[in-house]
Length: 268
Image 1 (cartoon, rainbow, N blue to C red):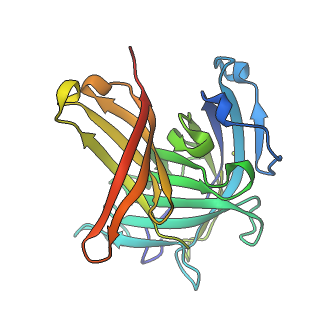
Image 2 (tube, rainbow, N blue to C red):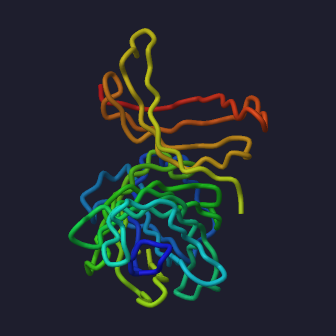
C-alpha cells in the first residue's frame, strides 16, 4: 500500500445497465466500449434497454500524475492496518489497459477502508463519460469492494443524461496491481466537479417529513447539472428520478445559490 493511499488492487470489470427511459437513448455512433444486450437474457422486461460497458479504470497513487489521494485517516490507521483511511479519486477510464489509450471518461468520487479484517472498500463514485453518445452523462455507483476477491460486484444506483433512471451493477476483476507503488489498473465489463451525497428534507404540505436522497456528480460551472435521485422516505418511498441544478447566483465570497428542479417516480 502506498503511504498516501488506501491499498487496493486493480481490477477488470464491466457494467450491465437497464434503462427504463428508452426514448432518451437515440441510436448514435457505435462506441468501442459499449454494446447492447438482450434484456430477456437476464430476466428483465423487454421495455428496458440493456447496455454493456467495458473499460479500464486507472488508479494512480504515486509518481508525477497521481489520480487518487488520501484525504483522511483514523488515529489508528497505519500502513499495516489501513482501516479508516479515506481517498478521493479522479481516475481515467480507457478502452484498454494502456493508460495512454483512448479516454472514455473519469471515475470521480471517494473510497474508504471500511473493514478491520480484510481489504474491503466502501466506494461512492460516478463514472463521468466523455465519449460518443454518452458524452456528458454519468452513472452513480455505491457499494462494497473486497479488493482481493476474484470478482467483485457493486450496484449502479442511478445516473444522469442518457442514464436517467438507470439501474444495474458493475463487476470488477483484478487486472494489474503494483504492491510497491499501490498503483492499479481496473478493467470495468480538469474541471470543477463535486461528488454530492445529500437529502432534501421537506417541511411543507403533503411532503412534510418526507425526504429525497441524491447522489451524483455536479459540474458546478455547467449551465445545468444533473444528479440522480436514488431513493426516499415517507411519501417518497421507493422514489427514483433526477434533480436538475441551475446556477441562480454565485458570489465568490459567500458561495453559490442553485435553482433545483426535481423529476421523480415512486410506488403508487
